[in-house]
Length: 119
Length: 109
Image (cartoon, rainbow over the protein chains, first blue to last red):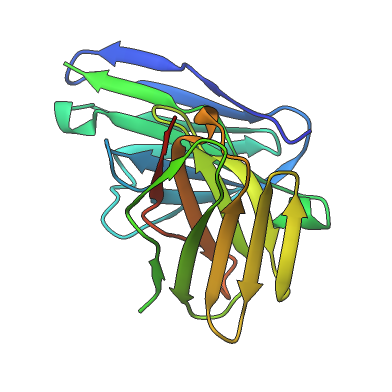
C-alpha cells in the first residue's frame, strides 16, 4: 500500500515554456500533498504544501505565480512550472500524506520524482 | 530556530553494523522519520518513532530519546545495496517535516 506515482519521470523543455507535473496517490486518499525540489547532492527543499480543495501554502522564497499548484482531488495534485528557465532545472518530488488514521496519517510517501531539464 | 544534525558521510564494511545518529532541536515534536534515498531516486520510508525506545524492523532498527533530542538508525548485516543517503526528519508542532541534510553511507566489500 501507500504508492505514489509521478508523471512524467523526465522532461526536457525549451526556456520559456511551461511544464506540468502530476502526482497521484494510487491506493490511498491524500489530504495533504507536498512538493519538494532537490538539487544535486543537496537535501530536500520543501516548495509548497497543498490541501485538497484549498490554496497551496508556499515556502518563503518560492514564487507562487511561477510554480502553480492545483490539488483538485484527494488523489491528484499538479505542479506547473511556468515560463521555465535553465535555473529551474532540478529534481522535483511530490509526497502525499494519508487521510486515514494511524501511522499512515503521519507518514509522507514519496513519488519517484521528475527530473526537469530546461535548455 | 529548528535544526536537524546528522553526519555528512559514513563508511562501513559489507556484513558489518553501522549506526547513523541524528540530533534535533525543533518547535514541538510529533515524531521522527528515517528515509532511505538512493542516488537519483526519491526517498523511501524506513521508520517512524514517536515514543522513546527501539523499533526493530528486520535488519533496520531506529531508536528515539525525546529528552535528549536524539535518534539513531541501526543497520545490521550490511549489504552493498544499503549504499544510499539516509535522511532524518522531525515532524514539528505544525505537523511539518523538518529535514536533515542526509547521511551518505558508503558500503565497502
